[in-house]
Image (tube, rainbow, N blue to C red; front, side):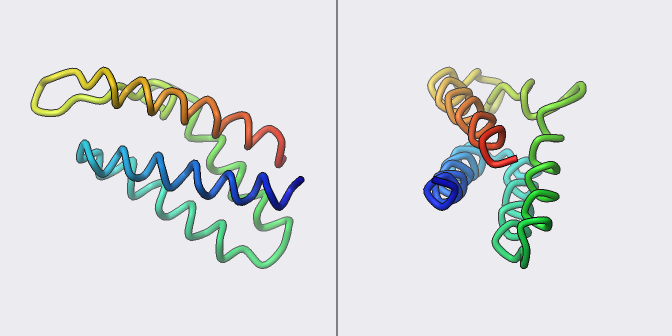
Length: 99
């Protein structure tokens, strides 16, 4: 189960990065790329759990990943924001399973 969840985690993060790059949210896409790389390079379960904690931290506080609404050139991107929201919820659920 954990292996499937790990693969699903990486796939979900890939999809999040794709959306963020598509709408030119460079800081958020870079943050997720860095954390994904860190997760892939983790050598132990303990190191992976640390990275999972870092991803969880993106969900808390003002201006967090939870608050992100996508705009491009002043136009609200409803479809992309809705898709991101579904991925955001799914990622959170995966993080809860893996911790």
